[in-house]
Image: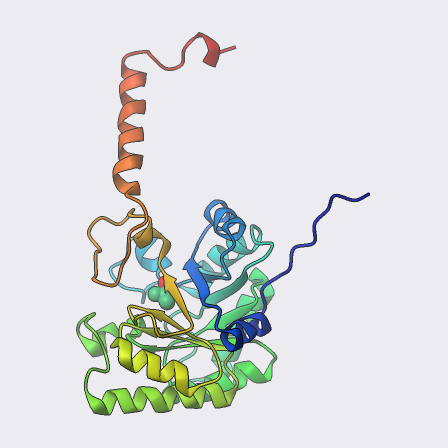
Length: 271
Ligand code: KIV
């Protein structure tokens, strides 16, 4: 008798069914093989290879500098680890805005070279042509509205978006446009909880929130933030599940001490 257990993969259809059944969707970022292995085996529904890699992996101040080649490198590392989760990869800044043919080429490169399952891009009506062209090639697209970090120099700050009626109305309309275009889900970042809930109720596709309250269909966080690797970043919406910065630093300090004191390696740790 085979002991091999078939793993049921999460697909875009699974997410739709989860919304229909009222089951919340869990989503977390990952950027490398080792961490993606743990995230996948923990049972995460969606892994986002976010362009937040630009911040947490490469140390840039914003998400703008990361390149398509770098995103493909991160995505292919994640994909090699994943057996169950749906993997979404961010199209980086400058690879899809303004030119829908370039958007399609960028999305195809991600799908072909990393073997990821879908792409995400930021914006509503202004990127609709790109969304449509990517979808026409059979590539699943996740939208991203509200605080879209690739537009940080337009916004000027990372504060809550769509507090005013006009921006809230535009966001509702954009969500509808993305749904009608055929996006399989939308991330809504840092908007009032009541608005996010209204958006989630107004569309049939899952709305996944970050800093958008509990009335949406799922939640996403950046791994380094929720593990407490980033000490400085502590927005109100963030729940820290660990204080890894201090724990890891403590391990490094103990190792240095052991090496200096010739306490490591001991008899049983040598040949
Ligand atoms: O890049 C990223 O990590 C993201 C999340 C904040 C949703 O887009």
